[in-house]
Amino acid sequence: MRLSRYFLPVTKEPPADAQVASHKLMLRAGLVRQTSAGIYAWLPLGHRVLKKIESIVREEQDRAGAVEMLMPTIQSAEYWRDTGRYEAYGPEMLRIEDRQGRDLLYGPTNEDMITALFRDGAKSYRDLPRMLYHIQWKFRDEIRPRFGVMRGREFLMKDAYSFDLDEAGGRISYNKQFVAYLRTFKRMGLRAIPMQADTGPIGGDLSHEFIILADSGESEVFFHKNWEQDRSYDVDVEDTAALQGFVDSMTADYAATDEKRDEEREAELGDTLLKSRGIEVGHIFFFGDKYTKALGMQVSGPGGDMITPLMGSYGVGVSRLVGAIIEASHDDNGIVWPEPVAPYKVGLINMRADDEACVATSDDLYAKLEAAGVEVLYDDRDERGGAKFATMDLIGLPWQLVIGPRGIKNGVVELTNRATGEREELSAESALEKLV
RNA sequence: CGGGGAGUGGCGCAGCCUGGUAGCGCAUCUGUUUUGGGAACAGAGGGUCGCAGGUUCGAAUCCUGUCUCCCCGACCA
Image 1 (cartoon, rainbow, N blue to C red):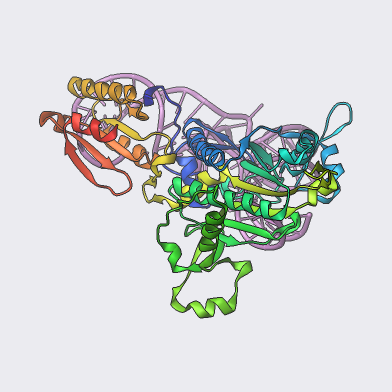
Image 2 (cartoon, helix red, strand yellow):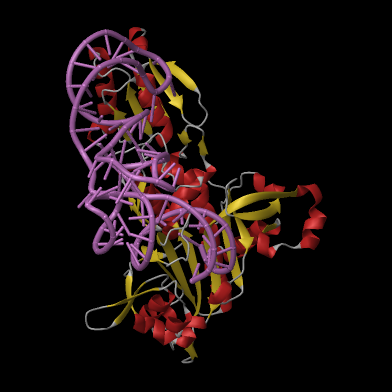
């Protein structure tokens, strides 16, 4: 994409109402604009990041054996009346009335609807186990939205739901999602730590929050220093025993949020106990028959008996992750995107739009990168070099490829790594090879 | 919802107390000189001062109402 044809409104100064780093940077870098309290428009660059994150989440859900579908944002209140949650949910549910006077709502979550849908379509034990998911916008009328997209009212969420015949099966589904979450966040360049969590009003007993560490995180978290090391998440999730062993090993090291601290265990840990701030980016629960029972879902068992399936639900805050990743990865000059979620891989800077040689080389490299399928944002504007550098640093693309008269004279271009600041001069051909 | 604060060109702000018809920086546009880390100079465009009433010869400024946004708290992927 040529910057001269793009829509990238960047600013030097952040709007006064942004407090945290990620929010300021998202506004400055032209990723989002607020349209109402806690509601954001995703501008082109931000939209690309959102889609990247969504894709990674989708790939890992598919890999875990979950099946994608799409439920609506607007739901009939009937689904919620049937589970008794319409009255119970409280004012953070946005209630809407249509012209016929029917009660609707903008879905804050989908347990009620998915259970009804699955109930109506699954009649036999052969239809289970199943995991279904969708990636859809949700709305929760938070009393006070803040921190930009990390705590908006409207947010994009991946929510998956598992249906199993018994608790052992439910645990397997839970474990599969557990692994999928570790893999998902790692692929985004994040270290996410699973922490024992309260199950809240949703009920149940198996529950973990996935927390990423960031200085500006919303809550305080405590964990064993082993979590500082990179971990590999290679495990065959179809091998039940191996899967359980893996999950056990991942939950062996102490990790707890402020609310769930265990003073005895912490005392034993001594100086291996670390403290940080964290942001919750995922939450998984196993909650049994709460909804299947309420909605009368039963399937025929192999012996002609009727079985009430057990459920779990698994959420990832997709839009929140955009902010969370920035919290975990930025510096004084701007965002530092981990490559897998970067809106473009390469920022191509032509230092002199009025220099024929520079333009020719830049155009050529741009065409070759595009042809090779490398995502490249080409700053072909007639601006000074300094302004281009500042913009590139701000929007945080992983690689900056600089074409200037100085280098052209010596037959070289310059390649800079945004994260490390490492800079090297090399031939255009070598640069291409490195980036493809 | 309780407490606090703010709405003035695209962004950040001053002006309001002490009414006299709007200003600064950044951004934008034009020209010239520049050109490797947010250039300099000269000029230009852009604002019914959130909205609605009221007071007054006259309201960004005073009064009343209302809407929106932000901060602290309880709540939360």
